Image (cartoon, rainbow, N blue to C red; front, side, top):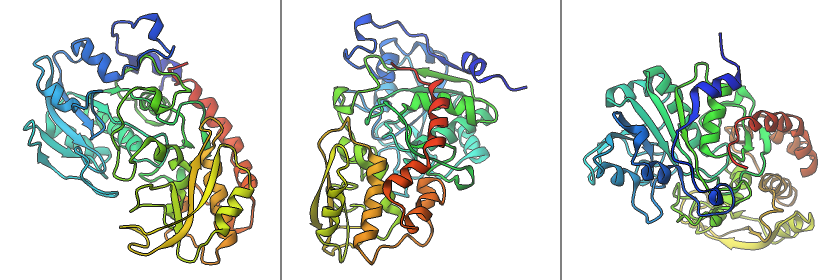
Length: 411
């Protein structure tokens, strides 16, 4: 018999008992301490006697930019025996849709295993072969359902349960705040690696909160889960409030500004327009051959909160329209608190289709995988306004917001 969600949280999603921080730093805007910083400050006591493997990538760094794998490997108090790399790889050398494969890390000699596109029993076998008894996760997320690291988290939790391993999540900030969830909720029949479970397009959660949600709602059998929470982080904080350095989580996520728009403008991956890959401002620059200043003017007329649109021309160095000059828009967010990235992304799709006769969806219906159903595509094709499209998902979004509330850990 399955436990209730609250009972499940009490038994399998306990926060690791580290020393309590001073009251002045607990959710009050004091100096943020990541999950890793708190674990290290406690001498890695929760990992004592365990054979540890860590799922991480180039974002797994300390605030002085040392990689946590290098730090832990050099510390005799941790028995670190394996590293697991996600999409783009452990050291972050691979482009979208790629990984680094199996190799030995030159810096530490540790075996690095590839988790990308592995799940279920196949990934459980990787954990078993590595010889670990505890899998630790520490990767910087960007807050969007279709960013694959949260599904690496999900797959690794499921595989750890199948392999009989314990699982620990070291928390990091959601760089675009944890104020609220936004956008359509994925329908299960559209589950892929850009969305395994019914989560909203911008989830407004940290990875540790998502781990609790996955354990309590989606995994058929929960994994023994521990979370090391941050201190000094508030749900309204953007990344620049953290005091942490920004390391690109993937090659086309160069700045926190990219993360701010990504949960909306990544939808242009599902069209024949460039989403700005191959430029210095991916997901902020959008365009195609044959588009002119009418698109920016049409988008600006909507008066969307917190954002302006500039007529822009650019030549991508790779990806769509490589080496060709295209026209389009650049997004300029001037009020982050008022800005709604998902509504903005939908409005840009609607206006692009209105002003450019060449607009088309990708032939593989990738837009349906990104939005989580056929609804957005079909409504836009039926000439719905952006507000009508946004209104259509509000009931399911409200249900997701209620569900997620139980798993939030920060004020």
